Length: 128
Image 1 (cartoon, rainbow, N blue to C red):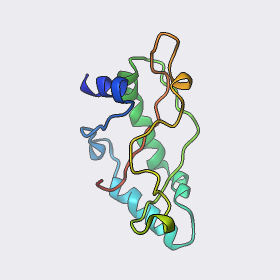
Image 2: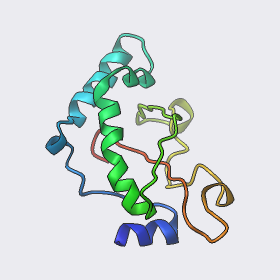
Image 3: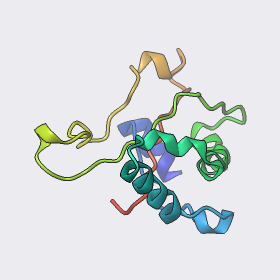
């Protein structure tokens, strides 16, 4: 309920209670694979070649249904992976991710009666 309230008032929230190992998902393995992909010259988005990432997304459906107060949750095929690095902002990707933000306008992600219809989900693979 706290998360739903935060999403409605602030436009974002953080889920800290999801236990990925309980559903067979290793965030460390995914993070290590992203790193390995980059070491071999592939962009982080290539992580979506692997089933474990899709399994992670599938496990979010029940959680998102509760937050959106809807049993009809659909996943957009608009997925991406970033590998943000520390350092001077002008030399690193991701310098514009410093604050929570909404990727769509309010009108594009709410109904006329102010019900949320869309949610962008950012999933850090390492502690943030």
